[in-house]
Length: 304
Ligand SMILES: [Zn+2]
Image (cartoon, rainbow, N blue to C red):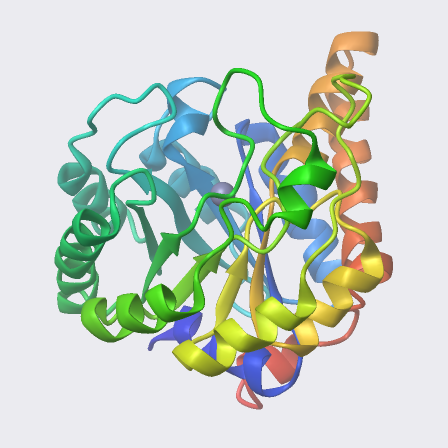
């Protein structure tokens, strides 16, 4: 059945969230799934195009194959993250074949990212993506607003972005976008950042992001759909918890576990140690940061 749609819907109803862990290197799969199981939680395992184009994920097929080695439907399912229409290098992407590959390889939900298009362009392409996903029986996530951090080049300091709500998802645009596209989940910009963004001091260190909780609440009311938070690691914990209570029913986690893996691999060259660090980081995120220990049944329902 429609496991991913049910999971996110149940998360919304129960003031919980479904974390989606990105796997940019196949060896990260096993420790992440083991951590989710050991916390008796439920999570999505995700991969984005940028992770097979620029990191070590190789292809959506390879990640799906690795997933099936350790698959446990009571705890995890597959999600295809960020299929961009225009990518981070401003190049046009032939996204439809990627969507179809995702369906073919058993991904249980798909994300189209038309956020680099103007509003009308984003609506048009998202509507088409939703049609394709729905005709395969899958939910479709879309993005509206500019979650900062994937772009290169200088950006204003974080505090200035937050204060001026620069790039935040507009409430009325979100209402119209969801109505006209039929997307199931909406990725919104409410203060989070992808990857590293420079702090006010100009250093490359990632700043601790906050969320505009009132804005989250208004977006959820206006759209009526579960909201998705990207750049889910490195946000103030109370903000994340507050966002979850106000409709953020899916949170993407990419850089935090990737850095644990890549950092350890670079310093010690020990893949086993790198995997154990990923395991510990994932468990601590589930337990301390998201407070999701023991929530599996509330997410996937009593049958699980
Ligand atoms: Zn993202």
